[in-house]
Image 1 (cartoon, rainbow, N blue to C red):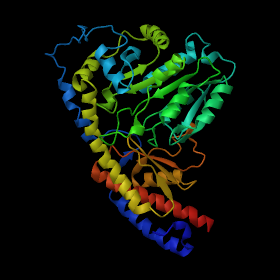
Image 2: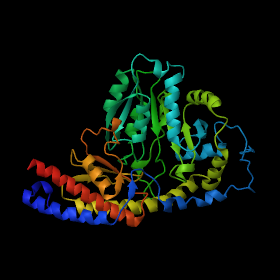
Image 3: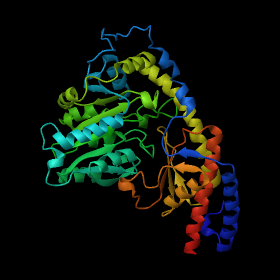
Image 4: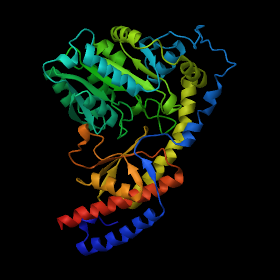
Length: 431
């Protein structure tokens, strides 16, 4: 196909009219589809329905240690649940605390606790003379940024590379500025680009020399087992950040988070925070006031259904098969309709839940708005950046998993038409 930039104004105007007619045809079909979040489809949720039967009214409700899961107690979680989630994160059960459904809630509570009570004896962040700062790899996970914005924490964007965050920048800011108290990380199949941090990047994280003694790495290993292919590539094997921090003499510097949200049921999963012994003691001290225990029956249900890492791999291979089909539908329409036009580029992740699309600079908001007019709701443009401000207005996060295959094909056609039309308008202005 001929690149749009190389087409004459008259050619572009004729093409625009043709594309508008095609988009109107899609609108006439009454498409109403929300692809704004990375939600599993019904076919994926069906894979976990048997989990609802492993614990019922006639079941033995005691766990492997004889704990009655119906009652109070066991604030740090059942041993079998700790073991299962720790295996998913490639760390040890001794470092684990098991929580309820959402690791995002655990991250929120961790920030909140730091604001009100400090970190292992430090001054509460809310009482510091200077505003607290967080480093935010971009594009990144919008809900991370929402948490820090909610607490009034200043967010500093750091560029993402295929190996992870720009570590030269991270090391400099952490070393020089005591107000920098943390960094958000999605180290495996990052949201939205699908990058996995290189071993060298992980080692550099473990060797950070933060000026702030209460600096913490928020290691959100959300997609630890979410591979699109049955055999993960060697470069997607993530080193154990907790073990590396122990080796460098900084065991307290990292909190790791993982959950079963997209392994079983997103609305009824279990989550884990893994941390050093010092961090665990402090967190459990706060938890002893906050709760008498999380849902142990759900922990038991997950442990009996998934059993161990072999069970997790079997479950996630099934998930990956279903997810990959949908990713391939999006890739196919992007390749067929946009390759060679020089109006967009996209990633081919090996895992995770998103495809990151880069439009022409200054076009993302207009594309998302036009898609909305056609009945397709996408993640708001700019959401992958702090304060919702993408300086290039170019990044769009595509979440392919929720629609049915037929819906996804129609959504893909609508999306590329919107990309083409907005790009033509931009190029026409320059001509």
